[in-house]
Image 1 (tube, rainbow, N blue to C red):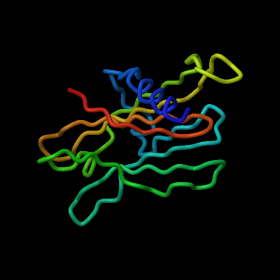
Image 2 (image 1 turned 45 degrees about the vertical axis):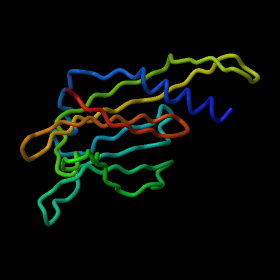
Image 3 (image 1 turned 60 degrees about the vertical axis):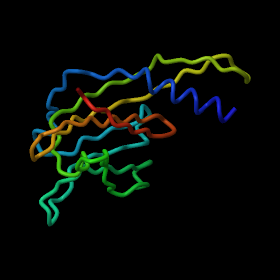
Amino acid sequence: MKKKRIQFFQIAAGFLILFAGFNVHPAVAQGQEPVLQSPDGQIEVAFTTGEESDSGAEPVLYSVSYKGNLLIDASGLELHLEGEAPLGSDVRIAGINRSENNTETYQLVAGKTSSVATRYNTLSLELEENSEPGCRLVIEARAYNDGVALRYLLPE
């Protein structure tokens, strides 16, 4: 059953929608952290760019709380590509897109029920490098009532 569950999440991740148009969210304009909450409001994921380091880099950081208790302290997110500087180590948040899903269902192979409905909220952060060549990176976070998922997207 564990192998089937992993395969489902790999397949489900392939069907996520990448939103092409991102708008700057008012929270970013006012200098506040973008925050994602689970549908029941108990899990919270906060994003920010880090304090400027000695190298001048501003990494993007995330933290996770459950019922107001910090579970994961501010942790950096970077994407290392062979032969390139890490994406995400010196970035600014250029845009935010939020969505929620209350209608996704999937069929179970075995068990007491034949289908399961899943609910989650999504927050996509469009990041731009502060230095040349100004590459873009999208970090998409999902908050479910029982967990959190993060993934990287590379726009063309």
